Length: 601
Ligand code: ADP
Ligand code: ZN
Image (cartoon, rainbow, N blue to C red):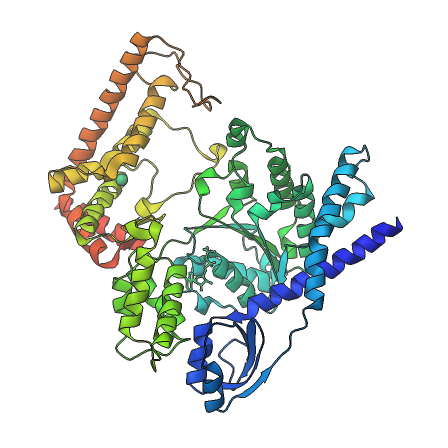
């Protein structure tokens, strides 16, 4: 047992070191900002190390400390410039003994740890005291207090902020909130593409409510050793409860909360994930929200989440954090441009018009890059040309090429999306339209509604399914009507429509032609081998195909009719979309009411 204590002590040292490194890393500022501050004469003193430069500013920027750390770049005449601007310069001789020692110890320890773990786990010793130190490890649960992020730092996502304000109110005073009968938030799911500011929003909630912020990445729950994920979840909640009110933030929830059925098919060892997920569900159900712990999770793939997570009392609030539209981008640019000095000719609004489809993180990068480019040409302030080069760089990035739509494509997408929206509005089918968008790969096209767990939903009847089919084809119908031509843009829609039509026939017995027999089983769309489960003859297959086409044709003519009768609404909506890129619920309602009035007249 003695060596176990030694081991524990070593582990703690490691943790402490890790944490201090983490905190340091967290303080690192972009080099460009350092240079801008230097040019402004705002730097009081610096000490130059081998890899980093630490320094003190004369005046602290809003919300930040005076001290800063930047990574040292190859900048030969820096010293000259530093001296010229009267900065106190000193050099530090970095004592690397400790670090070298650690870089030795770390791999050795990991080895010992793995060995220990396996001998214990498979050596017949049940999960006793020996596991505890590992289970208690907080290595990658980050706790931050006194967070300086505020809602003002997050721009262009006003709806999301509005929804989260309530969480802030709750955290500020959980007890009175519950006394007054407010609906207490427990789990909030932020849904949006990467880089749209989900983490930033969660932090801002913690900052506004001045509560501690626990964060962990969903994939880190499952990456480590077998059997640890569940312990870690328990541990995390225990720590959090002890510090309530507070926020627990889980990034990439999808890594942890994938639908269990999918895992079974993939056939890999997903016991671990399932255990962890079950533990998370148990913790969520087990705590009384009145103590003031709010779980916020983020995902960009809501469709793969286990429906159990979305049940009421769990993540029953979903907040869409979509890619910003033009106005949103201008605001985000403004936020980030506060930190740099720009020429008066630089207009956030104009920059926003060049960056359709960019996320908040892309925009932050652009501002940073532009500042770097300006620094390199030793400019006084960042000019439009610097921003242009920075944007080009991002656009040229390999996977991002497709992000910028030409005016032609944009027009087509606008009509396509208005087609979907109009058919959805006119047929109802329980699908309210919250948002229409022409931003590539945003989630908000056609008012994105998150899949709800089955038991929350009523049964779908045949007319609803038929309406769904027509909605899926509405995009293409609109292209046919307005462009007299079709594009490749509808491929996904056609897939979806075909799938619905097939299910109606082969699973729900909704075709008079094929009767009540089912031909495919629910939940088993593909076998482990990836092949379809055919349980019928070739002749039946032909009849199914014929029925599928018939249903699709019928839905298409419904869609075409609807599009034709709402022509002017689609035209008006599309022209607004071309300017502001998104239509929100209010815009859509206005358009709809106008067209209803027009039709009544
Ligand atoms: P996500 O968690 O959605 O992937 P992050 O919150 O990590 O995105 O965003 C990364 C960075 O991009 C932020 O730290 C911030 O600098 C910038 N950013 C992203 N979205 C916004 C926004 N809406 N307003 C201001 N800055 C943003
Ligand atoms: Zn479509």
